[in-house]
Length: 366
Image (tube, rainbow, N blue to C red; front, side, top):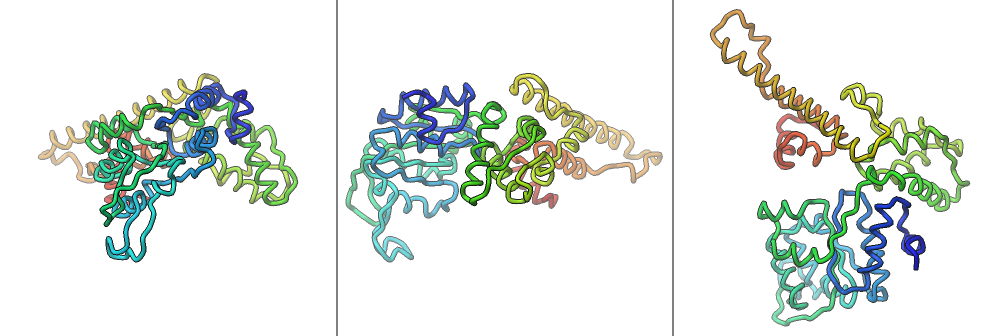
């Protein structure tokens, strides 16, 4: 089977070299009974690749069970994974199989595994090493044969360093690691994906095939797509739903995307440059860091001025800007730049995401 045939069979849309290289690796490792770790930003299509791995493996005739570890409360995740006996805890009115038993002889896809608690990580590691576990409230050992595919949008190496993820589990999961690049790093995939979403929407809603103008092509190729494929799909479908002419133009996206003009005006940055996307990404981040550094230097100068003139009546109180106001403005400035991508915002501000969320609540930024 060729790379193109594999992509068509498993619904992997894209013609970029990055996508084709990933597909080639999947074709090599899919049939090997080995754990696979998928990494990449939110919305890049990790679930599609996980499904392709399962469907091209020898386990394809058994279950592929998807578990979003970040969506299940910590206190319930263990019960969901391993099952429970009747009466094992309040509300356990029946015996229940867990996802491991449901996925027996098949594949268990653990999405957002970086959100799993350390306690559950210990029990997961034991199952991976022994293929055995006990339901909650049971004394009987249950054996299973399950292949694990895990996915995360976090850096598990950093999580291990910060003691939030077990080192032994990390190495057990990363036997094969596939990093799925963001959409901005494989722009050749944008138009094929857009065409697919338009065709799919038209067929589902019994509508004629929509057309789009050249300005739409330019817009789609030049936009940064922080939400990746998920954002592209939702934007395309919203533009089609609001369209009554059968042909979409750049105006169709006016209310659906952050306006490039405002972005350019505020940051003095171009939306698109005729150079490799990696270079563009680096330049955008460097310029943002320069602006933030300038804000910090201004803050230092103001603090120094306030200190030197604390007893100088010539300094008017109205000219003294509280540090909290400067901090609030710096956060707003960074959020506007990243289009409210909080993960990137925290990186640019050199603070943790937890600190950023606390500051948003403290300054009532929403």
